[in-house]
View 1 (cartoon, helix red, strand yellow):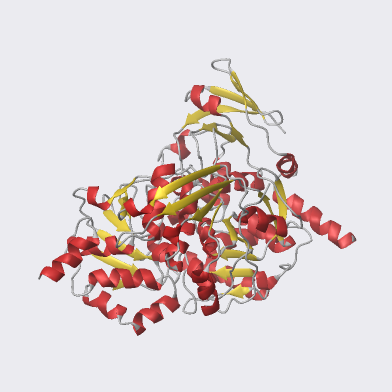
View 2 (spheres, helix red, strand yellow):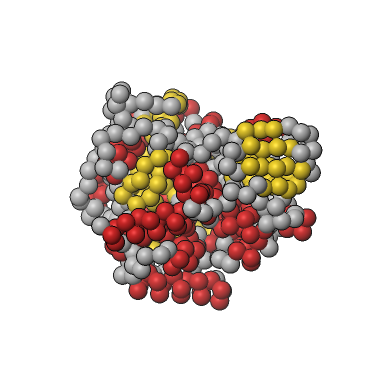
Amino acid sequence: METLRGRVWKYGANINTDVIIPGRYCHLTDPQELAKYCMADLDTEFVDKIKPGDIIVAGPNFGCGSSREVAPVSIKASGIGAVVAPSFARIFYRNAINIGFPIFESSDAYDEINEGDEVEIDPDSGTITDLTTGKQYQAKGFPEFLQQIMARGGLRGYAEEVLASRTQA
Amino acid sequence: MGLTISEKILARHAGRDSVEPGEIVMVDVDVVLANELSAALAIDEFKKIEGAENILRPDSAVFVPDHFTPNKDITTAKLVQRVREFALSQNARWFEVGRAGIEHCVLPQNGIVGPGQVIIGGDSHTTTYGALGAFSTGVGSTDVAVAWAIGKTWLRVPPTFKVTYHGQLQPWVGGKDLILYTIGRITVDGATYMAMEFHGEALAGLPMAGRFTMANMSIEAGAKNGIFHVDDVTREYLASVRHTSYTEYSSDPDAHYEHEIEIDASQIEPQVAFPSIPENARPVSQAGDVKVDQVVIGTCTNGWIEDMREAAQVLRGHHVAPHIRCIVVPGSQEVQRQMVKEGLMEIFMDADCIVSTSTCGPCIGGHMGVLGEYEVCLSTTNRNFVGRMGARTAEIYLANPAVAAATAVAGHIVGPDEVVGRRAAA
């Protein structure tokens, strides 16, 4: 996978899906439409200030609350390249993996990386480099099964393989 | 080493004798739930899956349009139309407005969910059915689409967090108070990735309504699922909804628990979760002077007939305070029908409440009771996040139906004794 590089936008703990994409926009399904309201109830300037490739660094339990897949969809469509957090709420975690959006678990990165820092992430190794401070962090590895899903760009590829093998059998 | 109830159900559905926490397993799914929001995205994804033309097991796919229904505007009407067409063309189970209600009440009441099943749903409160001894968890739309296509889903086997409630519950204390207290104690990520397994003699007399509410809100502690063991209360409920064929699982005495806490439930009084996170729970007696603009009683968390009876018991003979809007939302059409039969509708209407049709509307700031700037709401729903029920500046407090009813009468947050006692004295 390609190296990710961008400027950091930092947020706190327990960022829930209601502030990532409020319920009033959850009837939308077009990613570009959803992108317009990303973080609407957390940071009203978010969509105007970010640039493609920028990286969110946030506190523990990122994405808690609702199962809405439009939460990672809106972040991905907004242009954000990845989210780094000490931990992710479980449905957000699986949604991100299922749609092929990069997430990385690291407590040290959250503790030490500052807003505005330029950060580079090697998705394959999980190495996070803060180019502003020169420090490096190692994100927690993913289980093999999830790596396979990510390598296929999401869960759909896995389902297609299962269906293909059933047809052959 | 023994297995927990969650591990046993997952092992069975993975075709294995046992599973271990942390490993990822592919499991057969008995029920796949979707509402109109999660379904719309899932349908788009399903159509992109090469080789998937039809839902593998249409009778396992359940659709309940409930979030923005009855349709709030043309956009949501179109969305529901699209989902309806898909569900009907797939011969899946479609629950139309007027014959249904909120998904988490509809599925149990129709006997669709029961002990020993693996259930996934495109809604985080799918954890509700753990009250019946099922392994039930919320997932995203891609998960729903893939489960439609292949009949399976991937799950990381959760370690289990055992919570035991001792003692006898105080008056006006129910499932909502136990779960709010517990979340207050362990925080909103205290059980992240884990199975919450509920035990203890304090739960023996707890009706299904209270158990559904606890399992429903286990997600608010970050849990993957919340689960109860089957007992006579469960069996009686299952018989009443004609869910007759099922397997009961139970945790082995030597099962491994990642965490265990013991709670003296006799010390818990009705709880109120302050803005803007469910872990901000405190006893109602310590709520202080909080004036409210709106009270919501019901939805998927406290929308059962038992909840309606509790609220009506407090409201009977009283009026909602003049500046307050009190919105009652039965969990389903069936609950509402029972409310009519028992005369509860009259009590609510005489008390100046509005009784809404069954919908998720106000809980997600969708419609039927959206909050304006700086308004304060006390609600029996499950989340008090910023912006959840409307404006970003609005504040949400969470409590049980009796506290909600008493608050509607008093105009500020109070416990039910202050209102019920007042009538007795008068």
